[in-house]
Amino acid sequence: MKKGQTKKPVAAAAAKATTAKVRKEAVHHLPSVQEICDEIVKLIEEDVFTPGERLREQDLADRFGVTRGRVREVLHSLEARGFIVIERMKGATVARHNKREFKAIAQVRAKLVSLAALRAAEDATKPERQEISKLAGALAADGPDMAAQDFRLATIRLVFAICDAAHSDFLRRIIDDVHRMPTSGRALRNLIVAERSRRVYAGKRWKAVAEAIAKGDGAKASALVDEIYESGLRAMEELVEASGS
Image (cartoon, rainbow, N blue to C red; front, side, top):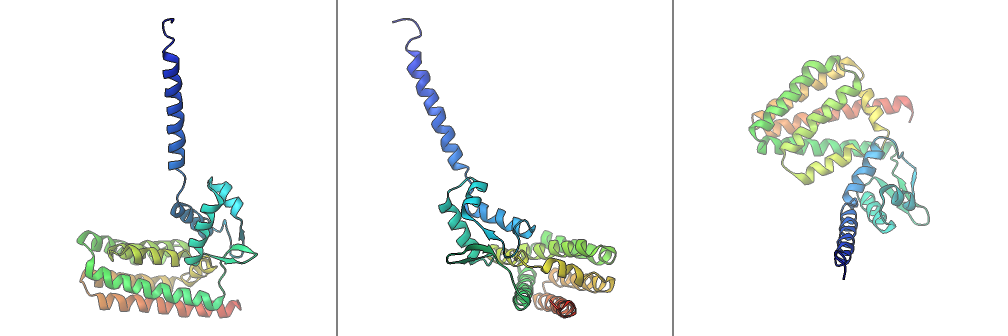
């Protein structure tokens, strides 16, 4: 036997093992059901997938490099969360909400954030209370001169800081879903704070919410959040009626 001949089987075995390892890692890194759900929700939020649009299983399987079986799991999860509707013989479509449903979504959002404020007043750490106060103070000081969309986004950052301080992953997840529901509401919510006077009002109230949380007064924080959202809902209804939609 010539020198070096015994190395060929070893080399072949090593190559085979490397290939198997690569394949195993590739399978391991396939996106999970939750990761795909999160990406589709993001696409819905960004209006890449619009209300009423059909979501085809094969297209999604190709897009995410997974089986149609995994896509079905994703679609059923998204249906349970209210982002899509699955109809027999028609498949899945992005959910669309009429005026009545949109109002219900706004009311649910208000109650959830009110609960988060109550919990935050009870459970927030000192750094969390400071962060909430900082965000609310900036909103009150700078909000009146912000563009409507920037004001709304700053408000959302404050709301999520309050949600995080409530120390409930379940509550945070539900509020996140409700905020990202596929409606035309984002444009409408921008219109609600289009007037400077409404940004002044909301900024002052959110600052009062932060002060109540800092003092541990959950009842007051919750009541103030209710007041903010009730005022916004009234303004929203006026805009909807005015537009005739």
